[in-house]
Image (tube, rainbow, N blue to C red):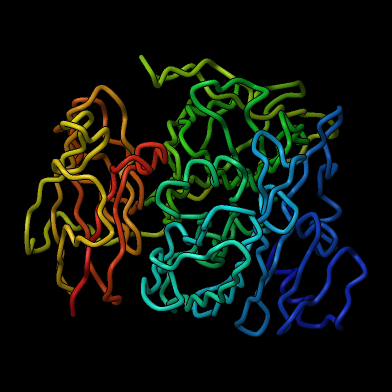
Length: 471
């Protein structure tokens, strides 16, 4: 999806039931756009656009986009086998990744999930969204047998942070196979960052990155379902990249050769000011939003550097190839400040807890606080309206990306070193034999949900616990 989304949204409101540029108004007015929003880009953005697809055998492509209209988004996700889906063999509605769902704070998102996988049960989790975990909202305890369908409804709060989120199955025991097989898709909550004048002028690209591990190499990594796609840029051009690591187990250590990644958002939340990275580690489930500015003409790799040790070791591999060509553009400015966040450093802490992530606890391969996941046991009870401090400890030689549903948290320190800025994340990696201290505010939504390691093979084998938030 290149170009200005808000312009497309304004045009969508004037559209009839059919839009010729690859777009169609679906049920309840949700706007479906094949290949992103390029067909509805405003005139100025069209004039300054790079070529939509880069050269070579693997041209760039954007996932299909479904927009909310009049505050409602409706979509159907048909989960079924698809042998041509890439490294895996599963897809939503015939595509890997599934459609990108774009909403705004205050919208309602209605998603019908159809299970046509053949044998497995499945369900749906909206990773990172601050929505209710109960009923037909982000309730991962709902399970669909083969042939069944379920209507989810997510009410996005009016004050929800803008940013990049994603959706995927969360059936315990099958998460690795289903997510790794291709059942993934992006969610964008618009506003906030997008409304900053500097960011609003930039072209936007979606990178839904899926890599296999431990056999990760260039042939095992796709971006929007394409192996090593070619990204077109012009010298001096600034682009806004949304990057999601939707891998089941693999890490990314992203580097844009010869360039910096100016990170403006993490896990759907803004950072206080842009942070320039030569390379940035992203665990499974993590997302970033970054501004990139092309230098001179040439060919450059967006690559994942060699990473990890022992069973987690991954070789270097190419994620995408960037071709910089054409007439120069004047670089757009990167904002000095983004959007400030409340600092939890000075707030009252209701309770401190220690969560220890372990491997090989007796007969349990992966555990939290000596216990494997049990769907009948609530491991942690919290009270709404409070802030807790959790010490996440890792006694194993592997990295473990901690993820909690419903709520974001602030990272306070890593291995005893204070975190350098105020942030909000929903996923953070605990180093081998290390620790991370976080503070979580529990707000708005009572109910049961989970926290777990987002290396899904670890989760499937027990590294997950249930939390219940009480009024």
